[in-house]
Image 1: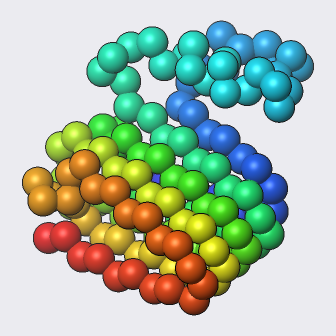
Image 2: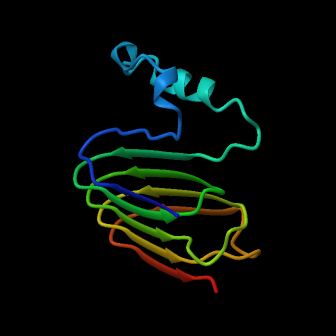
Length: 132
């Protein structure tokens, strides 16, 4: 089980990579995405990609090692809670939030939620999803 917590006011990318393969002093905003893409050469590898643009965005991810998740939060005061603790099976999810003060709270995963894509556009929206 992995626990990822992000609450940043600017653009942030995260990818599971081995740190000894990257010269961190040479990473900048022009080459970050390319470096991350080069690290994910194993077709069976899973990854998390989190992009947050805006102020006071927050992402709490409690995921297993087989979870592929892409999160984009564009706007201010958006919150994501994603808990995938009920299964060891592979899960692929993409969540995009565009707007302000949105909350997405997802707990669990199953065969119905595999491949889930959520796109929220607007302000002050809340989504609660439970998969047991």
